[in-house]
Length: 324
Image (cartoon, rainbow, N blue to C red):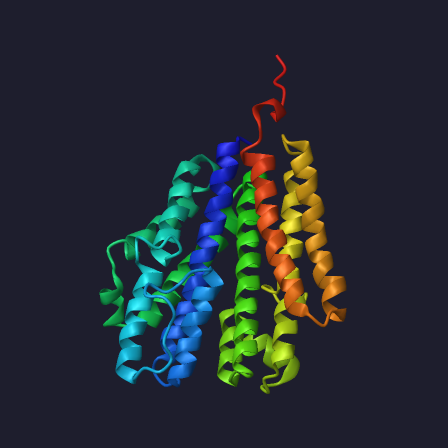
């Protein structure tokens, strides 16, 4: 596969996964505005920005504001995270970039995938925060998340299973792994700073990871933070658990096959294998589990760099020799 096509499919997978993840977080956050205490609302906004590695437009979020100021701040923060064109991580920008990458590799995806993506884009392209805020912002986030999930389902049923399929899924899983690690670290940092967090904070974390029903099935409705973290990190039966995502990205990387840059390709496969090992064998016995998550996050960033070097930006002298 041409490196340009691999790059487009990889980044399409990453950007759409980021947009979907952010929609889930924002849906829960705006739903919390109805009846949650101000401290919990501020915690939710801080968790989202920490997960993205960004600062709010005006810096730190103040926790001693009135209800009116909190609602006004939430309107501004939601606008920044959803439609702000100067925020590279806003839902709109992630969707725009995901669609643009899809357009550039139009020959690699199915007609049904392209149609699905365009229909979603036509719905959101002319909207701004005022349009959704006065109606039902949570419905907008739910619908956008559902449309991206639908796109993934259409891809599952219509996309040709060549290396393009693997690159798209590799991008999706690397993005999910990094976001999951960042979200868990943000939750742990808040827990450490505050001394304790409310059950609602942990329930929100489970819901944002589509894991609340799985938690109730395994542990009942009583929220215990350590159990929440373990479920989200180590449960092999939970579709979005960190261990399952890491295994999936290792499988996609192995399926892609030999890299034009053999050294970087082999290093990427070794690192992908070590990521799963960290969770399976080091997590249960480590007292400092945040350090394991930090290591996984760093390794995911290194894996992205190795994948880019191995399959996208490899040196010309390392490219395959063309025989007559």
